[in-house]
Amino acid sequence: MCGIVGVLSNQSAVPIIFEALRRLEYRGYDSAGIATLVNGSIERRRASGKLDNLGEILKKNALSGTVGIGHTRWATHGAPTENNAHPHATERVAIVHNGIIENHEALRKELEEAGQIFKSDTDSETIALLVDLYLKQGKSPKDAAHTALNRLEGAFAIAMLFANEENLMIGARHGAPLIVGFGESEMFLGSDSLALAPLTRRIAYMPDGSWVVLTRKGADFYDLEGRSIDCPIQITALMAGAIGKDGYRHYMEKELNEHPVVIGQTLRRFVNPSTHQIELPEIDFTSISRATVTACGSAYYAGMIGRYWLEEYARLPVDIDIASELRYRNPPLDKNGIGLLISQSGETADTLGALRLLKNAGQHIISVLNCEHSTMARESDTVLGTDAGVEIAVATTKAFSAQLTVLACLTLVAGVKRGNLTNETADACLSALLDVPSRVAEALQLQPAIQEMAKIVAEAQTVIYLGRGILFPVAMEGALKLKEISYIHADAYAAGEMKHGPIALIDPTVPIISVVPLGYLFDKTVSNLQEAKARGGRLLVFTDEKGAKTLKGIAEQVVVLPDVHPFVSPILYTVPVQMLAYEAALIKGTDVDQPRNLAKSVTVE
Ligand code: G6P
Picture 1: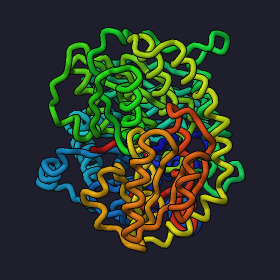
Picture 2: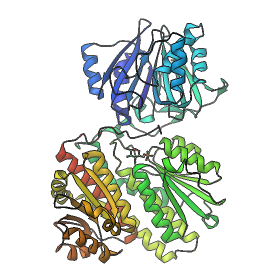
Picture 3: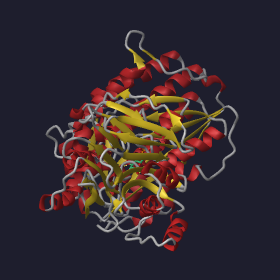
Picture 4: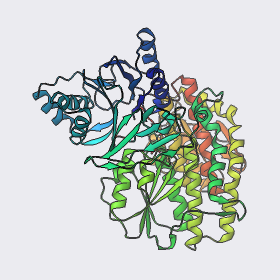
């Protein structure tokens, strides 16, 4: 959702900014741009499309300067053209922005009346023209920036560069992330620590509603009232080496193959190896009356699986809703309720909005997060971290299974503490969980069979995914992944619901992918598959050894996964459905890591 970089250096700024933008491209790739100061004047280069287009422009028309700002855009207001690309600039100031300025129309009118001339259709240009107006009125850059920031409504992370100010940069954040990096006589701004990973490990995470004045010597932080605030420097553990492809064709392929390691790492965080006990931060599960679970995208499906687990194993009543709905729904909430938020980035605007709603309603906030320095982490009462490492492919894979791993641990602890799970059952489930990395490693070996399945899927216009119970959200994850990266229309249905409508879609061109190990409502799901087959649907199934005995006579293709305890089957079956989407996208030749129109971290509503 737009990536921002700022560099105050003594060396040429453009290569540093360009490489940092490369690491931020997962946040948006509709257009990109860089502005620097050349002999005190603001110069910029911008290009529509991916960062490589900007690279081509810079090769033909290089940009010098040791201070500069850069941006990679996910368009909200205004088409992804060069004209709408950031930085937006006047002769006095250049800005890059991530977020949405909600009062941009009123500001645009006011600025136009004051004689300011807009050159783009974006909401972001209002920031540049507002600061410019205050500069023209004689304010210092710092005062102009501060006055302008207080006029903005909505969400923003901003970096500003001023003409003739070679040793100054101003950053601000309100509802969108921004961090400050401290180098040796160099300073940086970035949307996340990944952007700055090779540049510095000394990072300050700006609090929401703050702004910062950078010089090469350091940073002064302020709140929006202009009062000086502290913002401690932390040492990030993120290493530059974590962001290569390691010989894989795509980040998504690399990240798919990291499933076993990531699940293992996440388990190591919570399971004490000597006692074989799950250790979580103190949560009084006995007094909790209800959990309200919310998230967006794949994280929402992880939450759905969490609901099945918590209801069945911990007998905890659970409500679940998509965050963009929950935040405006005003649900009645119990006094002793918890809000359970799930997010890879910890920055998703809708999930953050829902978090605040739940917090204001007195819920204890537990967040399952991969980015533990994120805004959600700071605003939560309890953070349960997933150890998925950096995830770069826009479509999530390993972070999803890490979220499931944490939710499984949470379920077992809640189940025992609430007296609904015997120690023996909890131990059996935990043993199964500890076994998951090995079973997932085996599932990854099924790639050749999944490639065969992908050949059928890649030819389809529409694909239907079916699952029941706790495997229904896995079917949903499969359908979303396929849509996201191969652009094939796919939808998931609870297998029993198919006959109430979706069955009308079925004909011999429609592959029906089902996730159906023996056990949970197996016979009923098989009956639903028979109904689809009778209408000419092509059945492609993921099952286990025992299920395969029945399904091999019915389905066109059967991929047989290792046998596992039913408790962990959602984690195991996630891997092949994600891999199927990847293989289908390869056949379609789409941009797997950066699919069209998407962004990894969606910091606007
Ligand atoms: C975006 C991504 C999805 C992701 C969702 C939630 O839409 O494209 O892959 O699941 O955001 O992201 P979060 O960071 O909150 O998990």
